Image (cartoon, rainbow, N blue to C red):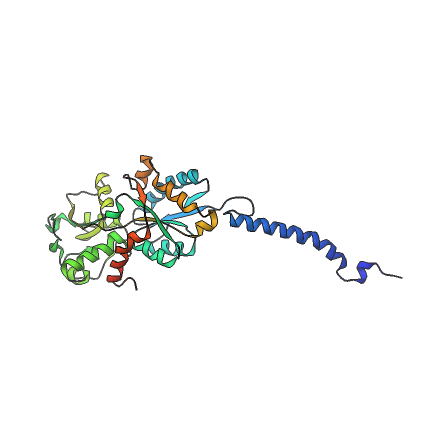
Length: 312
């Protein structure tokens, strides 16, 4: 008896069934690819722009403050935007390198590291104050060190703390000025190994409560802590203000161009520098507003890092 055609040819019937499935699969695959190219996913939702910031202030406060920026950018750019806290300075750079965050509020040092690690990364915005940033050297009143226009040589031999190890305003630039003025390393000048509090807030707290006698921190955090009554300027005394240097910046990852289009960085930059809401600017700790930034503006920081052996 003659067998059916499909029995005589193994897989014959399966081939007829498989063809529509293959066509369907190809169609779905094309949809997935198109969605990914346009910054979306296969279910039609759009990929979120994830941003972060170096954790140089109180982390709980940072989360509340940056949620306001996420809401603003979502509305302005018409895409999902979310804030992702970073555990440390190095963690924020590593997340940027991996593309896990695509926009970051970096300090001068972390910005240099991030842009060197990611080809095409661009500094796109900064605070009005950031091209002329500065640090304060602070001392507990018990030291007797008085405020001065000159570097406080009275700190010699005192206990001292920097902020985070990679902080521009809490470590790198203060160290630069210590070396330039005294001709000594911080270890030689203070007589002990470098100490790091981990954040500007913590540096102020440690000097205010006498845990250490002196420290260095960014001026905006000190001024904010004084204005909110969290430290006493008669106890935690600002004894010297450094010369100006460039510092904080918003840096964008080049993956944003692939995801949202070639004009997206311009749109993102415009959204940032166009912020006028006083409450949002206050949340960003830049009540004076934001302005455009370029990579070239932070070359002085890169050169300082080379001078200190932090870059090759």
